[in-house]
Length: 439
Length: 146
Image 1 (spheres, one colour):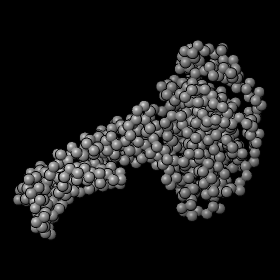
Image 2 (cartoon, rainbow over the protein chains, first blue to last red):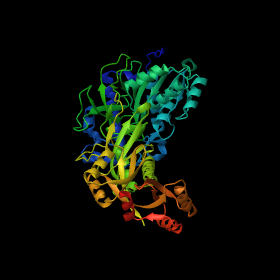
Image 3 (cartoon, rainbow over the protein chains, first blue to last red):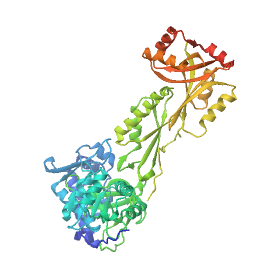
C-alpha cells in the first residue's frame, strides 16, 4: 500500500455551497441554458412539441418538464447541428471516444475550455495534485476528450506535465523513472499493463517515485483498484466524464474516496429508472442524466448517459457538499466498453452483413484473462460458404476479423460455428455474454 | 475420374465428432477413409463413404453443414517413392495440392492416395499423361471392400 497521504484541499468555493445557495445558482443557470438552446433547431422543435417555452422554466422544479436528449439524437445532428453559437466562436472540437461508427462531434468556446480545465482541476486537487508535482498523461491526445481535458486541468493547477500520450509502455516507465513522476493519468486498464510490465521486468519499486494516479475513460472495479495499489504502491483515484456532457471533469473522487463528487454548479444530475423514466430514490441504482449549466457551444438538456450508477446526497467528510455518484456498474443499453473503446453489438452485425458467406447470427463473449479485455465473436457460417479447403475457411475467418476491426477498431477472436447452432431469440436478443468481473 | 468426398464442418464443441460418427453408424454407413483438418476453433472432416448422398442428407438433418467435394484417388504400389512421383508430376505442371490423405487397401499391395488440387481438371490430365492409375468411384469402393 501507498504511504502517500492526500491532504484535503478544495479547489473552488462552488464545491461546498449550501443546499439553498446551490439550488438558486442551478435555477438561474438552467434558465440561461434553456434560453441558449433556443438557437439549436433540434431543441427549439423538441420544446415546441411539448408546448414548453423558455418563460415557463422558472426554477429547478421545472427541469422534469424538459425533453431528454439521447445519443441517437446527437448522431442525427452530426456533425454540428447541436451548436448554439456561431462557428467563429468555437475554439476546439472533440469527438466521441473510440469507435469508427457514426461519431458525434462536440465543440467548445474559449469560455467552455476555461470552465472545463477548472472542472478537471477540482477533481485533480481533490485527489492530491499540487503545483509542485510532475504528472505523466498517458491518455490518447486527439479527438478523445481524455488527453486534452486532463492536460489543461493539470496545467490549471500549475503542475508540470509530461504529455506522454498512450502507448509504448517501456518508454512510459522510463519517463516515470527518469523524470521522477509523481502522478499518472490514464485508463485503469492501461495502468494494469504498465504495472504488469514493471513486475515482469523486475523494476524495483524505489526506482519509481510515483505516488498516485487518476483513472478514467472506462468503468473499473474496486478489485482492480486494490490490485494496482498493491502492485504499484500508489493511491488511485476515479474520475468520470463523457464527451457529450463535457469530457472528464463531470465528477471525481476526493481524498475520502467514497464516491465521485459531481460539479453540480456546472451540471444538474438526475438518476432515473430507464424504463419508466421516473427518478429513483437516493442510493438506488438508475441511469444518470445530465443537464449542462455553463456550456456555451453545445449546451445539453437532460442527456441520457445510459450509465447505471447511484447517487449519494449525504455530506462528505471532505467538506464538499456536492452529490456523489457511485462507480458506473453497467449500462442501460447494450454498449460494451472494450479496452476503453465503445462497442455496440449492432456494429458487429453491421460488419457481418458486409462479409459474404456469414449470417448475422452471432454471440459476443467478453472476458478478461490476464487482465486484458478479450472478445470472442461466434459467427454462424452459411451452408454455401463452407469449403473443404482450410485455406478458404481461414480466409473467411480473416475477412470477418478484418471487417469487424474496420468497424470497431478492435481485433477480436472469431469462432466459426454451424448454422442454426446459436440460440434464436423471440423479442430482445441476448447477443452478449460478459464474463468480466463487475464492480 | 473424379470422386465424391463428403466434407463436414465441425465446430469446436465437445462430442461433435462422436455425434457425427453415431449418425453414420446407426445408418450402417461405413467410412472407407477419413481425414480431419483442425484449427483451434473448428475442424473440417473429410470422409470417403459409398453412400455419400444419403450420408449428406442424414447429417444435414442433424444440423451439420456437409458438402460433396471432388477429389482424385490414385492407386500406387505401397512402396517408397509412390507419393513423391505424383507430387513431382503435379509440380512440373504447376498444380498445387490443397490437401491430401491416404490409406492402404485390404489386399495390402497397394495404397490409395486422395488429392484435392487447386486445378482439378489440369491435374487429371497431367496424371493420365503420366499413365498413373486414377480410380473411379466403383473401382475405389471395390478395392476398399477387398
